[in-house]
Amino acid sequence: MLRHKPAHNHIAELDGLRALAVLPVIAFHFGANVNGSAGVTVFFALSGFIVTTVLLREHDQSGSIRLGEFYMRRFRRLLPASTLVVIATVITGWILSKPPIVRESLAALTYWADIERFTSTYSYGQSGYAPLEHFWSLAIEEQFYVVLPVACLLLLRFGRTKFALVIGVAAAVSVWFALAGSADPLMYFHPLARVCELLVGVLLALSAARLHRYWGIAALAMLVVILSGAVRPLPLITAAVTCAVIAGLPRVLAWAPLVLIGQYSYGLYLWHPLAAVIATTWQTRVLLAIVLAAACLHFVEAPVRFAMSVPRARRVMVAMSVAGLVVVALPFGRIAPTFIPSAPVVQAADNNPATGSGEKPVAVPVVKRPLRISGAGDSTQMFMDAAWQAYAAANPDDLTWVSPDPEIAVWTSGADSWIRDVAPTVPLSLAYDGPQGGLDRQGCPLVFDLEIRAVDTMRFTPSEKLHSPTPLPTCDWHIWMEPALARMHLDVLVVSWGVTSMWEYLMPDKTIAYIGEPEFDAVMLEHMRDFEAMAASYGTSVVWATYAPKMPDVDPARWTFPQTIDALAAMLLDRKCSADLRPLVRSEPNYPWYQDGYHFTAQGAARAVAWIAPSIEQCGALQTADERQHVNAQRGR
Image (tube, rainbow, N blue to C red; front, top):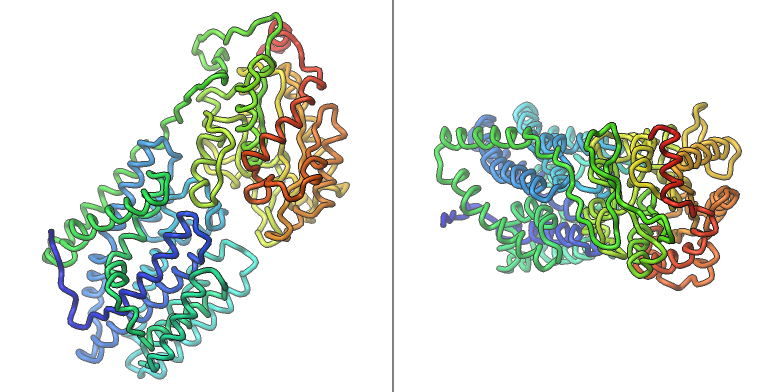
C-alpha cells in the first residue's frame, strides 16, 4: 500500500476542519437533519485560503507563478478520483437499472456540473435519481482554480493591497448577485452566486490575519452550531466564521481522529452518494463509503499524485478521461426497468396490435370477479398506489391491482423507481413494498400545457421539464395514459393530481393563476373532462381523490393554504365519481397522516384507501370483461 508523507508545511488543524466540513454533508445525504450545505461552504472558504496561500508563497519566492505546474498539481489531485467515481456510478446505475444520467455524467467529467444543475430546473435534492449531483461544488472549485492563478499573476504586480481590493469588489458583486437571485432556489448552484464564499478565503490569505486561539475556539463553537443545523445563516456568514476558525486554528482540530477523517475527506465526499445508491442502511453506507474512499486514495490518487512522473501521470489521466467518456457514451440507460410481479398484482397483457407482440390478453372471469383497478397522478398518488396494492392483497375477492407492463412502465415513475431513489435523501418510505405502482409521474400536473412553479420562490418552468427524461421529457399524460388503458382493461382508475393542481400556473396572457380562480378553473375543468372521456373510451371509470396536505408550518407557499385545498376539492367533488379525504384528515389533526406534509405515511395511506374503497363500487364501474373489451373493440383499440 502506497503511503505519502505530509508536506513540510502541512497543518493538521486544517485536516480537522476538512473533517468537520465533510461529516455534516455525508450525514445530511444519509438522512440526518443537519446543515450539509454549510459543510460545502466550509470547503469553499478553506479552498480559497489554501490555494491562495500556495500561490502567494510561490510568487514571493520566484516573483512569478508557473501556471502549467499549478494546473498539473490540481489535475493530479482531483481528476483521477472524480473520473473513477463517474465511471463506477454509471456502471452501477446500469447494473441496478437506474435511469440514464448521460448529461450529468458528462458535466461531472468536464467540470461544468454546476451549470448543468442550474439549467436542469431541479433545485437541490429534488431530482429523483441524481448520484452525481454533488459534483456541482467540485465544478465551482475547479473553475475557481482556473481563474485565480491568472488573477494572481496579473494583479500581484500591483501589490497585495490592490489585489485584495479587487477581490473585495468581486466578492461584493457575488454577494449582490446571490441576494438578487435568492428567490430562485437554482441559484444554489450558480458559480457567480457562490464564488464569494471562496473569495472570503482569498482575502484571509492576502491579509495573513491571525487570531488568538481563544477567538478561534469561539469561532469553532459557532461553526459547530451552524453545521448542526441549529442556526442556518447566509453562506457568506458561514464562510466568515470558517475564516475566523482558520485564523485562530484551535488545537482541538488537530485531534487524531479528525485529522484522519480530513485526510480522506475528498474521497468520502466523492464516494458517499454511490454508497447510498448501493446500500440501504446508513451503517452500511458509511462503511462502504470509507472502504471506497480508502481504496481510491491509496491505489489511485496517491500513485498518480506522488509516485508517477509528470508525463506518466498525464498519460494515465488522459486514459482515465477517455475511458470515462466511453463508459458514459455506452447505451446503458436504454435498458427498460424490470417488472417483478407479486400476487395479487396482474401485469397488463401486451395485446396492442401496434406492438406486434402477439401475446394473449390476461384471462379475466366474466362471472363475479374482483374489480380491476389502478392509480394515476403525481407523486402523492404513488403512496396511495402502494396502499391500494396492500388493500388488494388483503381483499382479493373485491379488488385486483393492475400495474403497467414494462413498455408503459418506462414512462411512469412509480413505486419501484422514483420513491426508492428519493427515499435515502428525503427520507420517504413506502406503505407497501410492491412492484411498479400505477400510471403516476412525479411532479407532472393534470394541466400539462402551461408553465408551472411549485412554490412562490421558484421560477416558472415548462411542464415538460418537470420530470427526468425517461424516455422523453414530457408531462403530457396522453402519451402514456391512452396506450396504458388500452392494454390494462381497467374498471376503475383512482386519480389524484392533488399537489401539482394547487401550484401556480402561468396563463397564456402571462398572468399568474391558481385553482379557484375562474381563468384557471376553466382550463382545469377542460382537462378533467378530457381525461374522463379518454378513460371512458376504454371502459374505465375515474375516481377523483382529494385530500388535505398539512404543510403550513414547513412551507408557507400558496398551494398549502386551506382555501386553495378547498377550491380544488370543490372542482373534484363536482365530478361524477370522487372521494373526499378532507373530513377524515381534518378530524384527527394529530394523526400521522403524512411523512412530509403531502406524501402519506403507511398508516395514513392505509386509512385513506379504506375511506376511498366504498366509492369504487358507487361509481358504477361494474361492466364484465366482455363488455369492456367490446367498448375497446368498437373503437378499434
